[in-house]
Amino acid sequence: MPRLSEIFGDRKLKKVEKKEEKETKTTDLRGIEGIEYEEDILSSKDFLEFGITYIKPMTIRNESDIQKITKELNDGNIVLGNVTPIAERDPGELRRLIEQLKGICKGIGGDIVGIGDSRILVTPANIRIYREK
Image (cartoon, rainbow, N blue to C red; front, side, top):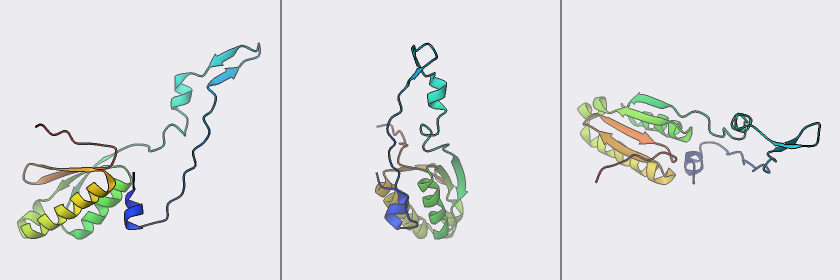
């Protein structure tokens, strides 16, 4: 799945090498094999690759805010955008910026949806928005 930095070339990506899977069995003093506790496996740094996902509220006023949204998506965060200022000022620019966000979401495998008349929800690649049919 492509990341935003690959699409836009914002920064160089570090290649992540996959580590060989660790054995989950340990040996105690008596030579009896034991199994690691789930807490030990879940607390390892390798398991928590992406960290915490935040929902970040933002007000969208101009095109520079779109760049901030793409950075948040690249970091794996969800953006709840308020489009009221730009909708009141120039509805045509709002349509253009929404189309730009749709293209970004399509490029990274994310999702975007309007919530009412004044908010949008933009998600990164690992999160989908449910829509009733």
